[in-house]
Image (cartoon, rainbow, N blue to C red; front, top):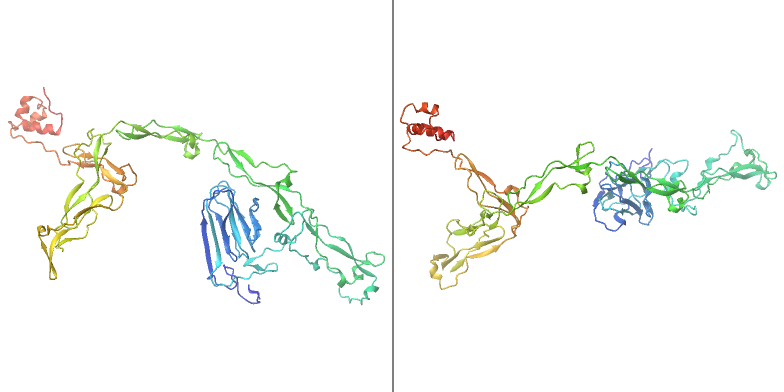
Length: 624
């Protein structure tokens, strides 16, 4: 029978995703977020606190940067990247779980660093960022039990292969590496904190012959043989703290000569206990990291790698101060690199004509980035600081001025009766060359126009109705209200002529209003003269987007932009009919075919026929 997570034989309880023994995954709460604060000071900055009991921990940098993630316990013990020492990617134990530290180093990779752990944690952990460049954002996520849930009990001691916090432990190794990874070590003294001797009675089994009844042992003081330590096993390491065990042999009490172990009482043989040996640290060495990607995609750039001074102690590789490696030549941390030859800028066309016929406009030219093979490539392949200008201003001289108008407002200032609608009028320079080159003049278009929404119903002395809506949705407008002279009767009001109330002060019936700034609006000039009198011409006007202060703006809605060009005079051209222009002969068609209409005699004698062909073929008629 199997043992459940509650340590009962035959129990089928298992630990759920939140670390609850026998849980049903409903008591979990996902905590997630993104740390996007802008940091200014270099160094360690706290990002998030991982509470006790957290599972499925994921701390990931949102894109690659020169920053580093760091992790330490609430007690101050560094777990990953502490004390300004950058650890290599790998697995690190902390807070009762195992963290996987990843740092992608491929040139093409854009992924950032990450910490991953299944949990649950048995203490509060703090996540930090070692800030060196702008923060790209840190995404964090973990799962905690919900409210009113009993926290999972952590198994303090486990046998090889037993689950720990819902995880299957790593198999025990014969070198006891796992034991050393789970305890703090002082590299200077070589003393391990919180450790105790490992008892291994099965390492040196007794060799009592089978099927033999042990002889009665005499009293201890009368024995002739006893166990004696004759040496120790070889140390498991040559430096950095290893282990060894004492060796016991059976000897004669008097002569100290070794005899077969059967002469001694096996029950009194001392149990070999592990002893530390070769406590002095191993020589420090330079741990060389991978080269970073080249700082430039073309041309001469730089690449970097991390060089750490490290020492091995108690089967752990520790980062130490660099002076411990001063007996070794330090490898280079930077190197030059060149992925390919850079491309160069080429000007492909001359400057275009100015974008406006008058005033200040722009002109452009074609500038391309060309590789050393002559191919056009992305601009990023060339040095952007050396890029020739492909656009510049051009001044075509002063322009004419015209009145620019907005459309009439949709609302009438009066809900009933006479009111007005308004529009904005402004004199500005225009860029349409067909308009006369002169100023706006004194013939300013009207800003108001009358409107009437129908007769008003009778109201109520001088009786003032409510103000109408503002005549404009934005900017300055007007409001109107109905003011009438009434007389109150029983249950009714009789409307009187205004002179009946003339002895009273009449309330105002109109006032100015201002709802809000209009922001940017479309203005346009009047239409120009049609380019043709018949058979389809076109007329133009200039349209501009202007802000409240009449400055050029780009904030107008493009879908509401008035048309700048429209067709006009689309009717067919009809020649004027002259009653005196007639054919005097029946065969005038022969005159037309012989092209005799160019002579004054035939043009008069066959006037109608010659005129028709002249209208169809301009330039047909002439003088001889």
